Length: 288
Image (cartoon, rainbow, N blue to C red; front, side):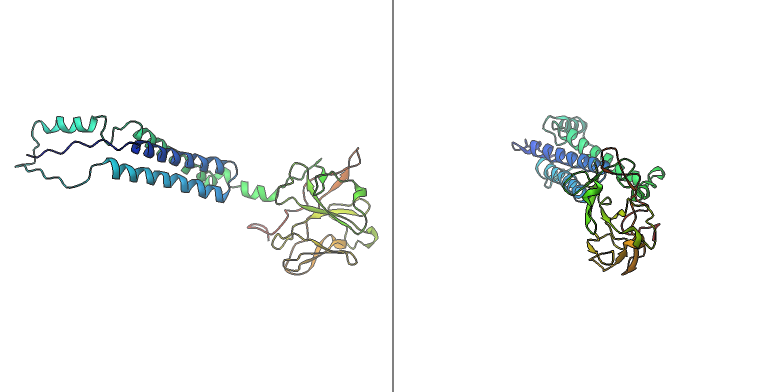
């Protein structure tokens, strides 16, 4: 009767490569969970998942190719009952230090990789749970603007009313939230006697502040027509009449630009007294 040959010792470095692959898989899964938990970033989440699954696949491939014996083995026997000494030999082979399933660190690294992937898979589920469903809506309704937030210029300098001369548009951002995509606004000084509709957010001797984002597709409205008091969106040519509380008068935009209520603090700087009068930017699922 032929015996299965003992498992040959693995070449130097094979175990280390497998463990490193599984550790890379675990690191990728943990990176995905952390990135998702901090707010999410599509590109980095994709990179982390690619590293996690690639590390797991590479580790298993090396394990199966270099450590698990392959080839055909013939064992002649008369019946299906193994000889009395077969079980001890099999147990000894599987429990030997150089056994494919008992090599030091391999099972621990594989377990770590699978556990990390399993835990990472739980993070996206929070977006489907009932207590998390209102968060996207709330995020669309709120911006970094609020009571007491100072208005900053593009250079990070606080703004005074005198920094906005008549007929000039000045881009403004909230202090502490200059990187927020829904926060950009603009300040402009108009002639109050030309208002055909009072600004919904109020004004300071003709000084008004509105969201910079077009209500059609969210493009910045950058072109100011001083003579007519209109702001023009260069993307799809929507036009907003600032003398009529930024009402859309041309183009595909259907909503007026949200206004930002402001006041002057004790130091003479402009501060918001609240958030925009409406969610800025393009419409979304429960808002046209």
